[in-house]
Length: 188
Image (cartoon, rainbow, N blue to C red; front, top):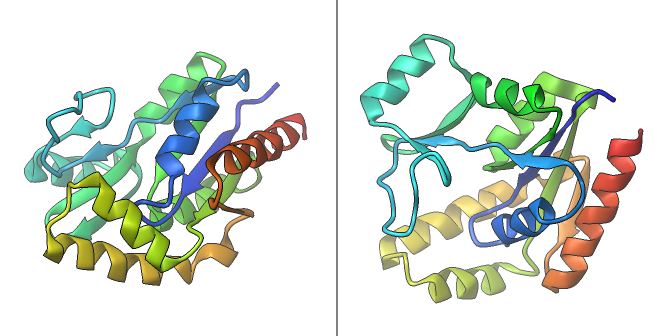
């Protein structure tokens, strides 16, 4: 059977990373696509596991060399992207690729792979709920929290462009919905 791609996108704090981690522990033959980023590594993160951490110059060189499937400057000098070599690496193992990417990146991957890809938007129950989740992380300054919430409002306008939308108001329900959607897609 041909390998496929599963794309999860959402505003920061909506729960997509938690859902993706649970899906990776299921029996769906999924392997995580590690994104590249130019942002600073957080203390608990590991290069090559959480992200491929690149300097801004390294990232720009890879853009110039057409090494990315998709990339975006999310904030000033804060780039994220998917290396083409990462998808090829996963497909060579016979696994399906699962992405945890920003909204624009998710749409770009879907546009590139069309029917080989399933795009899923994880919707927070409300912006207020999203703000509370981000505050609980304790990783944001007031300024960065405001930036993330403003960006989230904008990203929510793209939800209907995704193949499926999952509202994450109950994590277990959202995970089960994601599993069922993916099982159906992989059988097609």
